[in-house]
Image (tube, rainbow, N blue to C red; front, side, top):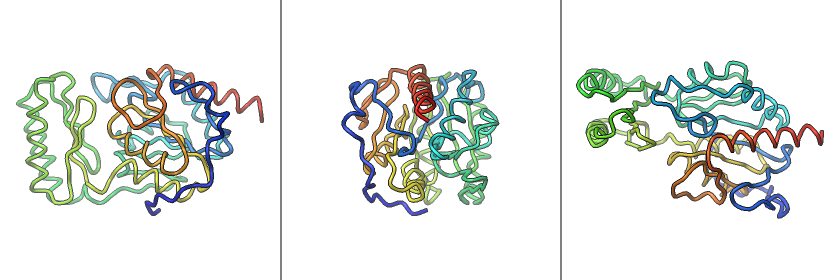
Length: 266
């Protein structure tokens, strides 16, 4: 799937935007491609990444939307693919994990190769030892990236950024990207934008709708906007998105309402 920004023929009708910038109307699901972040968008952010829980009934909503969009819904997350499948064991649709480094599309799995390099393995082993000296800092190991979470030790932010910055200098092709109370060492050619653009090469002539809460979702917003769609920012903070929801609860309400409207009209 190539990453091009060709304008799609689908556009958002004016009457789909009648509720203002804080609560957009969703387009007809037959004409939509939906891209959803996970942490901070579908689930509340937890102290530990393994502590999140999807609200009862929300997986059924996602399954319903998968049916009504003819499978054109994707979970696009920084979380690793195995964890996403564990949390949503019955969801049949596309899952993009690790910011695009992993994917499950139509039952086929792909993973970027960077996690198999000697430099990556050495950096992972070094960070395992490093976090032992920093109470409250958690190392999350993904197939092709390494994340330091400092939510429980906010005074260690500069330490986390410093060590990953140093490692990036000896790992060609890797960059450091910040997120909410975490910093990640990852391949520079991996991003949510590339993942979304790749899917839009398959899901042509649709209105892309991207919903997310984090800095890494801004690239996804740009991909949706560049292809005739729109973006919804969840929570506070600067954003390129035109629309905004206050939190996870409003995301759930929006998705439920969209599914109910689709079911009534089908």
